Structures are given as C-alpha cells and as structure tokens.
Image 1 (cartoon, one colour):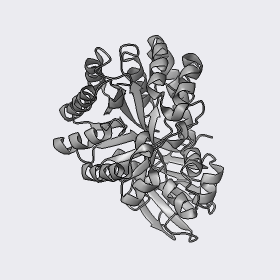
Image 2: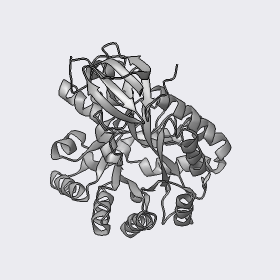
Image 3: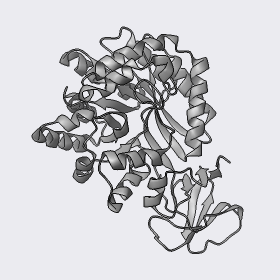
Image 4: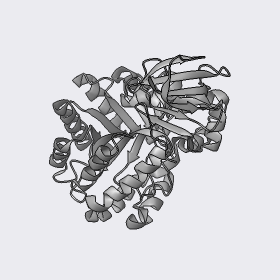
Length: 396
C-alpha cells in the first residue's frame, strides 16, 4: 500500500509523457507510465507539472514584518548610491532590535512559515541576528518556529552576527550561546568590520566555531573588501569544502575581470556555492557568469517587509520571476536554470541530500497549476498540492 500515488503527472524529464509517481515512507518509490498497487491517497495532477518542492537559500526570519517598526531610513540608505550606504543602513536598522522579544517575533515567524507552506517552500535557511541589542531573542524565536513546523518545513537556523564581531562587544560569546541553544549554521558578515585585520578575525573566529560544533557556514561575501577570498582560503585550510555558502556577493558586479576569475577558481576549490537575492538591492552576484563557470547558485527570498526590502511572500516562483528580469534570464533555457536555482541546485548549495524527483529521492514535491516551467514562473501561483516527507500538507 503506497502512501500517495500521483497520476497524470508531467515532469521536467518526461516532457509531454504523463507518468504516475509512487510515494511510500517519505521516499519516491516509483516513476512510470503506470505504478502498480493501491494508495491511501491518490492525487490527480491533471496533466500539470510535478517537481521538487522549493528551497529558499536565504531568509532573515527574525526580521520578517518589522519594516514599520524599523522605519524607512535604513531602506532608503540600503538602496541608494549603488549600495554604498549598506553599512550605514545596517547601523540604522540596528536600534529597533533593542525591543526584540521572542513573544512577538514568533508570531511573525509563524506568519512567514504559513506562507512558505502555502507556496511549496519546504526548505529555508533562516538567519537570526545575534548581537548586544537582539541578544538571543531572534534565535530563540526561529528555533521555536523550526520545531513547531518541523513536519512541514526544514528550517536551518543561522546564528548571524549582523552587526559584526570585533565592533560588537560580546557578539562572539553570543554566537557560541546560540549554537549551544541549537542553531544549525554559523553565519558571518565580515565586511561590516572596520579594518582588514578585524575582517579576517571575523572569518576565522566564525569558521573556528563551525569546526568546533561541526556546523555548516553561511557568510555574506564582499570581495571589494576581499572577505570572500578570506572565506575561501579559510574553508580550504580547515578542510570544510562543500560545507560553506556565500550569500549575496553583491560587490561581484564591481570586480575587475581578472579578480573575478580568481574568485571563481577559489570558490570552486573551496566548493562554495553562492546564494543570490537580486531583487533586494541594486547590486547582485554575477549569476550567469558563475553558472557558466560551474559554480552552483541558488536564489533566496532574503527579506519580507523589513528594513531592507518592503515586499515578499516566501514564494520562490515569484523570486524566480523577479530574477528572470533582473538577471536578464528570459530564454526558456534560462528559465530552466532559474527553476533549478529554487529547487535542485538550491538544495545542493545548502547541502540538502536527495532533493530530486527520482526513485529513491525525498518525497518533497509540488503539483503545480501549470504544465511547464515557463508558465509556472510567469504566473507564480501557489501549487495545487504540496507534499513534504511523503505527506500532503497542502493549504486548502
């Protein structure tokens, strides 16, 4: 007896041929024109596309729905002058975190997670600020959300020193406390520091925590300050290849070509994937060049109505739609790459195993309202069905 059988399904590999998909014990057990056996639930895909569920490589989950609390000043600064005011923006957004409290943050976390389930976004790398103002309130709320939604969402909680390590007294100790609480990933933003020596200490100290706690790493890279280069070198030195991601890397648009090529080689040697959020700032990573060079790239939501971006729904098809415009990826081949960047490639970047529509793959799937990737990105509507670990979790 199968748990779920999906009938009349199109897949990205089978094209116009309709297939059936068998699911049992959280795994895909069969993909064929006809799958034998009865099922507890039969889902008729009605000729629509069935794919892996969506992966969100970057979301500041402790900050969702805080724009009106934080005010407009940081938002304006962040987006003006070719992002030259990014540090000032972060400084202006920091003050309101003094009112951080797990009690109200968890309500916002739940609201965002409910949207994620609705839109088939079943995996999220979720950043939570850790500093003297936020303390551990954001981390506590995001960890609580991870546990409450564990049957519907896989949330990787990142302990994130948003305001720096050297310039923020006690931040190093608070990151360690966050890891002791159960954070899954060590974060970093070394370019926020004032000197190159402090940037290097930021990279080294956070990576040392990752090794001590056996955790993955997510750092916001900025090669204008050469911090991405620092991260690559540290990852190689500590033997952590394949266990680090670089978020944003917005300064990449400003690199001299020879330095960009050097960074590509270092990224490949360190096996570091990149997560880009091109809709949340006027600069972004050179996504097409990275993909052409063989560096895996994922997309992220980044923000939902906070001090850096005023919109957002945890809808990764919408993120791909925006990226299609901003990255000038509008051919059908480009759209397939974009779809990978919110499903299979995104999973690879985040270290998620077996997130693939194949026999033996995890049964984390969406049944879309459209017949192909082109129309799915164009209309970016909620899936007809969302399946997580072999269970139908569709929001009706």
